[in-house]
Image (cartoon, rainbow, N blue to C red; front, side, top):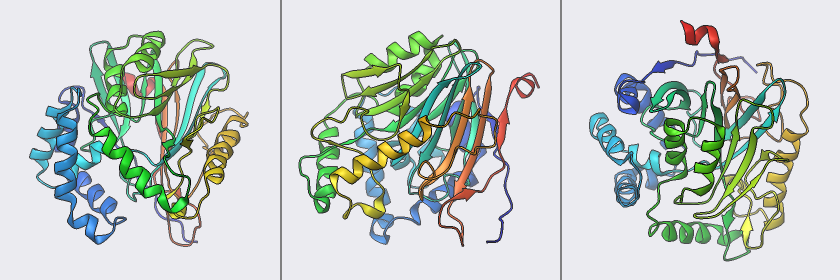
Length: 357
């Protein structure tokens, strides 16, 4: 297998101007990302992107998100379809863990079927009323899926399990569409936009935890949160208006730690019509078990990103320690000749020296 040249992950200071400035400065990257993501979708879906944008725009404008105007400005400025859809879509699956070492650490992989997310990943330095933070993101996206606020906390999002009205594999798409239709009537902000709001307004771990636990959201989600002091770590399993927080087993995949009747762990698109209900749950359990059994220190080698945490949809891996103000990111993509995704970027590390510069 020929090794591809590794690209550098940009770090963009958008404390003044926010995601709109990011989209303007990285317009070409945003367009390339949109085109790469669309290449994975069937031709009929690609042709229907303006319609998907319109539906997503209608849903988001009915929500209580404070960032709708920002999305509208980005979509208008960039002038191509897909921006609303990007900000209304949701991760396919992920694996995360918060762990105490010399200080609390948060590590996570992001799994999404769309190609290009690893190749085009960027780090944005943003700011809110209580200070600056870093978001691992892409041009045109306004929410936060993975972030680190030096001296405050780090947090990430995993997609929660799916509510199943049926049990047969071939009926999964029907359940997905029914769940999406049910979300139409929900007025709360999406989970990723709540996480951005928390980074902008929460001065510490305790406040961030309370906001993530108690703020109503548009759809179920799993938050992993790590602070700066020993013991400041938790996983928050959220439904629209309820939560379960655990502070002992602080690993997460895409199922509730204690499985609940009617809910099913998330699976990849390649086994959508063949994977049984029990196999779907086992997929999350295997990834959760693999990451929580990793005891070596996190030193930037990302040697914990192995099967099954590493899978065909892995697009990004992150290590974050807010007590040290440390953030490390690597982008992954599927490459010719390899069964599993491989790093396509250099490891980007942000630490105290870079912040001072």
